[in-house]
Length: 462
Image 1 (cartoon, rainbow, N blue to C red):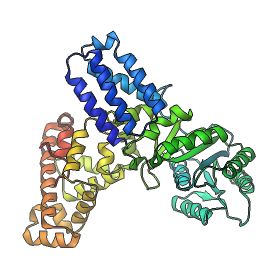
Image 2: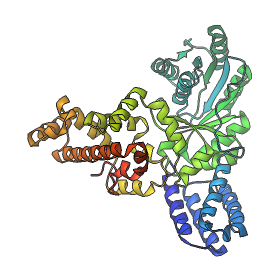
Image 3: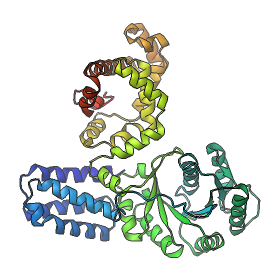
Image 4: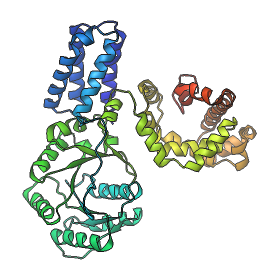
């Protein structure tokens, strides 16, 4: 997400940083480019105007123009203003779903058909169950879309969350009341009510949502919007906010939106905070929306905090400890490389990790120019999976005939096998060097070595 905007803003600010001093004309020129970049990213015009005007007013002050590092000062002003626009007026931290109410806490899910509302309902339920240790009951109120209730039931089985039994012919308000009663009887902490959507906003949908709202008194009303619809998503959010009373927004398909304009416009236009973002199809691909962290990502500063949090949630502790122990001894075989590949996939793949690291825009560009994509991880896993245990433990025994067998077994070419073995050899050599340097040396080795083997080339290069 935000790739195109990050790239454009990165070019603007790189030029500012290289200049020893800035004039007011320099700032104005940069702000014109920022304005174009925001408009191309599909940010709403009123938001662009407010953003650029406020940044310019702060950036042309004597404190900035006479600063030792004026370019850095301008970037800081932009970062602060981005954080405010994204909803961080009271701090850069994100707003979680509010469960501070008498259980069972009703959460009303609303949105247009096709926005990913039912899947998002299940994702949130899984998050509440696993992360917050809450007992959740899900209920589908969608009696119009064929198999909508069955879809939620199947998702509930997959994630281990209870769903309200389906009674044919029951109206949405009656289903909602039955869900709340069932939640009380079953000792549920949260009851999630998944309402019906439409292809567009109409009075029938709004009336139904209002009736359910009035019958259940939801503590949270979450609007699910598709980020790929751009400014239409903002318009939809504004209408739901005015007619239903939305307390928070969940933006889906953020991983597929390289522009991100809807997210930048949402809080400013609607006044409702973005609480969560969907970043993939998997049921755990849901993140808290942290305005400060997102602003840093947009400006290419990375988001190490989120990466560490995600790693703590997704990586296997036992595997990580075993790998760390081996690395300290300078040992690193192909089984260890396979473990790292699996863990990288859990963190969102190469792009997912790189998007959270500071100053890796050029590495990402190298990857794109070199044709490096996420499929490489799958191919490398397949190559390692085609090896015998002895070959994985001791790659030196893999000679020409074995390489041909491994390539045939993994559906790849011998060149791919050679490339993987070379990558492993570079990483193994690096582990040995770091084990000799100790823990401080490990930290000093830097990101460049970890990603490119010290050669300045993109990771997993072709």
